Image 1 (tube, rainbow, N blue to C red):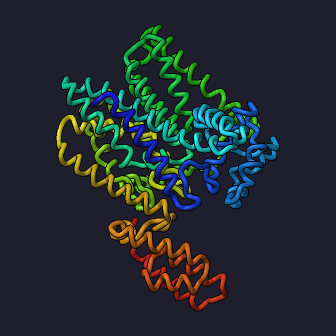
Image 2: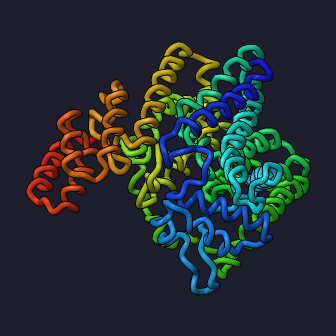
Image 3: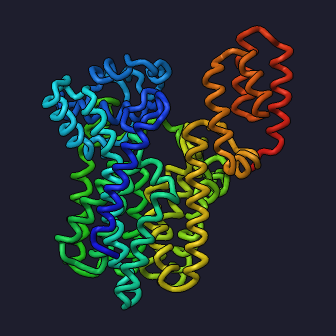
Amino acid sequence: MPPLLVPGFAAILFVLLIGLDAAAPGGRGFLVVTPRNVDSIAYFSTAHSLLFDRDFDLTNQFAHMLSRPGTERTRNSRWVAVQPRTGLPSSPYAIGYPLLAMPFLAAGTAVDALTGHRADGYGPWAERVFAASSAALFAAGLFVLHQWLLLVGLQWTGDARSVRRWAGVATLWLAPATAAGYYAFTVMSHSASFFAASLFFFAWWKARDSNDWQPWLAVGAAAGLMTLCRWQNALFLLIPAVYEFPYAFRQRHWWISRGAAACMLMLLLAPQFRQWHTIYGSYLTLPQGPQFLAWPPSRVLHVLFSSHNGLFFTTPATLVGAGGLAWAAWRERTTVLPLLLGVVAQVILVGSLPRHWHGLAFAMRLLISSLPLLSLGLLYLLLHRGRAAVLAWICLGSMFTLLSAVQWRYEFVPRRGPLTVDEAFAEKIDLGTAYARHQAMEQAGDDAEALEAVLERFGESRVLLRRLSAACDRAGLPDRKESTDARLRRLEKDLLF
């Protein structure tokens, strides 16, 4: 793989980001802190508060961000409610992404100052450059992941040329074929988490058989960073624990090196403990509340196979990565089985969430941190057998996922709940009609008569029927509402899993 391929791909990513932002319909731009997304507002506000106020009190930031048009629902979210114990607004999100994005906010503010805009961190360039941090962190994650795959691949086979070629494929497939590519264009923590997890896997692989304390300091730092980005990433600490267990307590140098990693981990986590204490009044807490998890996990199959964001359904190319990782774990049990167990732990955790789809979200975003491990599984397949079939499946899966992302982003299909057979498959073939119908619906607004005309012109769709039902309800047309709801129920008889 040419050494400039990953940086070149990153450049293409940024050009695509700018182009998509310019072409996006109103309110759906990519280089913005989305007003309807409380996560994005909280991440931006945390970075702003740390940079300008040097604290975790987001009162000033929320007063500004939640007063903007489009934030009416967000400002009433329980996730930003004032905590009675401290009198400060909530922010139940890990702080790793805001910390990593602070330099971008500072750079954007500097551009605002140079171009005559407000230089208080709320200027147009401050927001745009901050939003671009997600794509930058995704590109950085791809670079680190590629280095790790090269390292592992060369240990699996001595054919350096083959390893370079297929490590490149096993890196770059993530952009079109998985949720990681989609969330590189959002102001959320997933790209930061992907980068930090890739860094942890790389650092651990290099240090795993060493008793020197220096490489284990790097492991501890990477572990702390990935946990700061998303707390669920702490489950990846099972990987070194499982790998080390047969050899634990061997000698004094083992204790020193692993102790250094543990100390570095706790040092990196200190800012998170400080934020919890400042906002919630406790150094250890679960900000989402005890109801956030439900044991035993009952939705593991939904996490993997549901048409509502299931990993293998919405991003089917991941199936070959998971299969390759399982096969590698069978043949390389000492080194790869712990990695497979890390993925299994993540799936079980997400399956314990009452809402496994995790809000208004595209694809299985809660497993983005596990994607580097699926890339490893893909590399194993590409190095050993079935390349033509694997590559064909990745291409088909990428096409399916990209079309699904377009459907979801522009609300051509319902954003909540399972899909129908037509929504999941047939409508992907005719996105032009879906786009024309969407434009006609936007022009019709909440006018029941106009929406009826759209229905006559384009035929039935659940999105249109739901809009029409709500319009009939507001217009006081109960008979037409009941007729519309009956048509909607008929369509929903074909819902998938």
